[in-house]
Image 1 (cartoon, helix red, strand yellow):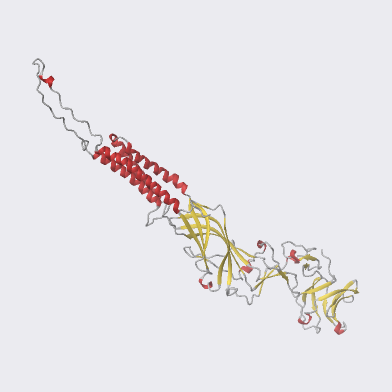
Image 2: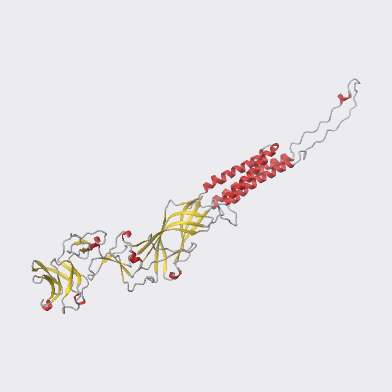
Length: 523
């Protein structure tokens, strides 16, 4: 407890002529019936009447002869009591609930006996007044407004700035076939409403929750998710946190109010609306470099057209969880883009495809198939049936792989990087197949010299005893030409086809590396 001052204040709605007489001092010399008296700075006296067993207020202007007000209580005068004006002594005869307190502005005076509590214990969710006095937790409305003049449909000011905090929680799903992605994002909107006044705010915003009753009375900003199918809007429901941010200094409420409250100006303390949204947004996927592509998917927020003249958006903070997972993508951060200043805000999420998966599942197997197709050129042409089947099988497998990959991507009017790769993978076995057919179709004697050596006649003396047949030697054909057409075709194919394949590999991966920011991040 805090030691009471000798100075006392009379709090509550006094009549007009008594409005100035709120300051009293305890008078140790005017004790009546064991009760100390009080003297007002304007000459009023509050004293205990032992005859009528009540407290009475008199004025020195009337020589304290006429009783102006009475308080019917046998307790000490501090605390919350019913003050009743005496007829013909004041302009009003209606009783008034007033509180005599000596606690000072920075303390709350309990209603029952006037005990003093630090004012920050007022409306803290815990009863602190003794003797089952719950007055420190009563009348704890955070918002005070003039309900007669407050217009819910009217914007608080003509140039209202709605401050935005955006926190990206997760990118849950990416629907490339539907050109959409599902984003989990927490939006917080903060604004000033000068028509209000706040009481007894806490430092933690979660302790300053706006009541359901006040939610229905207040003007609340609305934003449109501009890149959704139905132009969805922000909503106010049970999952929405509606709070008051304590940002400014407090003042004290006037003595005309019974309870001591800390008053916070609405020009220095903002209202905040916060909610977690899980929403499907449109995104145009540029797949030319697939699977080494880099995507930018937007989150577009816009003020509704009927509020665009009065409300301006201003982004204060944007944050994201570092471990955002996005299926086959790696989250690469965000970029703020404002297409139109004021009523339009665009935030782009950067998505880098996880290309290592496609290296293992597509490029490595297809490279092996292409290598097998090339190696068939180095098999002896006598194994034509086996080599031709290998080339055909490689081409069919590449076609199947191409169809399976294309089925997971949206149809485009342009060729993607993976299309070029798989088309080359199908073309290579086809070229090998055509080379093998050409080699097999070439006649064996094409380009060869099969002429018979000319016969020479030499007269010799032949023994008549030797048979004539033993003297005949058949002509010997020339050896085959080692540079036949078949050999030349295979030799050329074994050089040209692998060389062109290696050139294609180099150009392909050079383009993938040079065009994708993954491989050369900005410093």
